[in-house]
Image 1 (tube, rainbow, N blue to C red):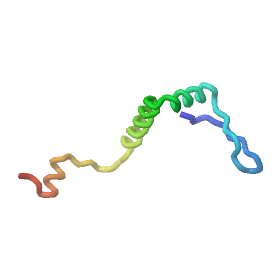
Image 2 (image 1 turned 90 degrees about the vertical axis):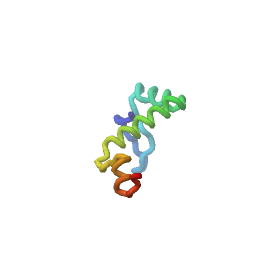
Image 3 (image 1 turned 60 degrees about the horizontal axis):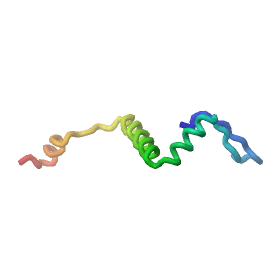
Image 4 (image 1 turned 90 degrees about the horizontal axis):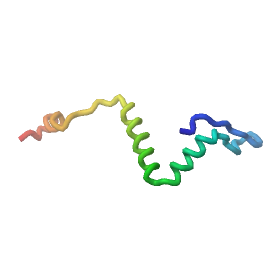
Length: 70
């Protein structure tokens, strides 16, 4: 969202951003509906987490490593 925009500078500093009207409408709808906004932010978080390259461990692996197997 909001990937395509144009910045207008005034005295060398960003003053305005111009975006496609459809993107504006989508952003406005999203920001005016807390349920949609929450869903969008959850989706973005999931995308970010999926990109991680960290090793994950199962609960059984953690228990074994911590010697918590009874």
